[in-house]
Image 1: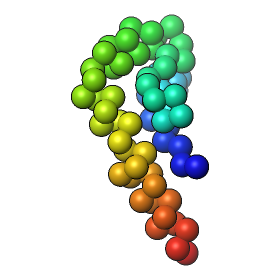
Image 2 (image 1 turned 90 degrees about the vertical axis):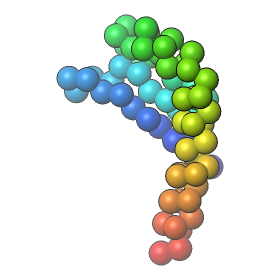
Image 3 (image 1 turned 30 degrees about the horizontal axis):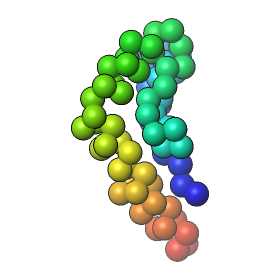
Length: 67
């Protein structure tokens, strides 16, 4: 299957990520905990990011497979 990862990095350290297999943002470090809570509370944002696996990732995957 197709998986979408959106990684947030500051000072070369990943602190929060969205993983389409999980369906929500997850903190990777202590710095990311409050950001995770904020991002996951924004329902419109979650819907948009969840849809990206279908609108962006699957489309690009299909284009890549044609080569």
